[in-house]
Length: 88
Image (cartoon, rainbow, N blue to C red; front, side, top):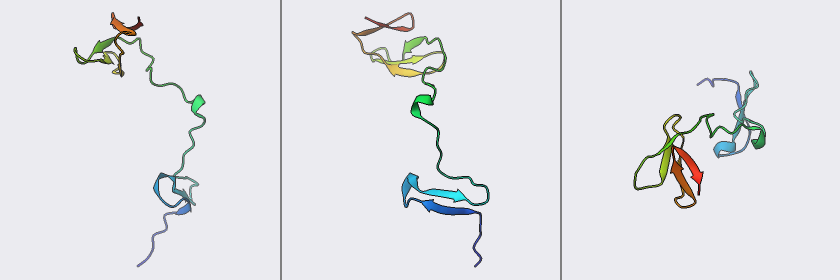
């Protein structure tokens, strides 16, 4: 049986997500470097003027009706007024 040479070779690591393979033809690697964590933009706000509503009237789970961002509100220190989280 002939072995197919697709260019991928084992570089380092033995098991799991830290096993690295590299393509000798293209130079592509299975490991990616996305830079420093402080340089990654904060994408949790969605650049939205949030308008939150309760998803359960008896609970503390809220969700923005514009972008869908969800979260929890802590009743007492926070209140929900006109769709905004206000510190009490």
